[in-house]
Length: 309
Image (cartoon, rainbow, N blue to C red; front, side, top):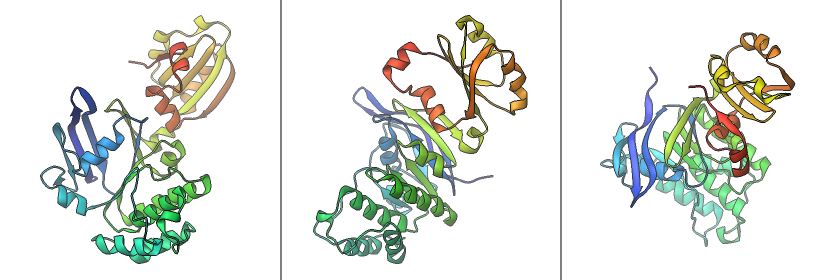
C-alpha cells in the first residue's frame, strides 16, 4: 500500500463569506509528483499555504508526513522546501551569497546541489540580485528550492517568467528530483509542465477540488473531433448510455467525444455514428481541464457540454 505524504480532509478556508478553499479532500502519495491546476482564484495558493501552516483553516484537517499542519506547523515546514509564487530574495546580495545563505539556513540544504542547478540553468551567480532580470531571479529561487534535500518539495508556479527552453530544463529537474523518492507538489497554469512531470493531477474550481486523475490513465483516453451533417444524429441520452463515452460536447454540427478503453471497443460504433471529418488524438490534461474550465466565455455560452451520469 502506497504511503500518503500529504492529506487534506474537508479542508476549508473562508474569508467572511468567500470560500477560498471549500471542503478540500486530497491524498498525495509519497514519492510522487502531484500537479495542481486551476485559474487564478481557484484556491491553489491558499491550499499550499494552508498545508504549510501559514494560514489557519476555518475547518477541516491536513497532515504532511504525519504532522498536523496547524498544531505542528513548525515540524511541517522542517519537512518542506517551498517555492512561493513570488519569491523575495535579498536584493543587495550576489547570487552565490544567496545560495550560501539559504543552504546554511535549511536543515536539508545542499550548497553543492544548488550550485549544480544554477550552473545547469546558466545563471550568473556573480551578479547582485537587484541587477538580475525577473527570469534570473526565478532561476536563483529554483536553485535554492530544488537544491534542498527536503523530503517534500512544494512549487507554486515554478516556471513563471521563464522562456520555453529554460522551462523545459526546469521540468526535467523536477522529474529528476522524484528519483530521490521525494514528494513534489507542483502548481502551474502550463499544461505541458504538468504533463511533462506529474504522476497525478487535481483540478480546482472556486476553492473546490473538482477532479483528480492519474496521468498514465489519462493518456489511455482518446479525443474524437468530428462534424455531423445533422445535429440530431447524436443524442445526449444515447451517448450517456455508451460505457466508453467519458465526456462529450456538441455545438451544432461540431462534436467532441472523450472515449476510454481500447479503440477496438468503440471504432465500430464510430464508423456507424454518421460523423465526418473525424480526427482522433490522445487525450491530455488540457482536455480534462476544459471540462471544468471552458476556454472562453463565448465558447462556454455557445457550446453544449454534457457528461454521462
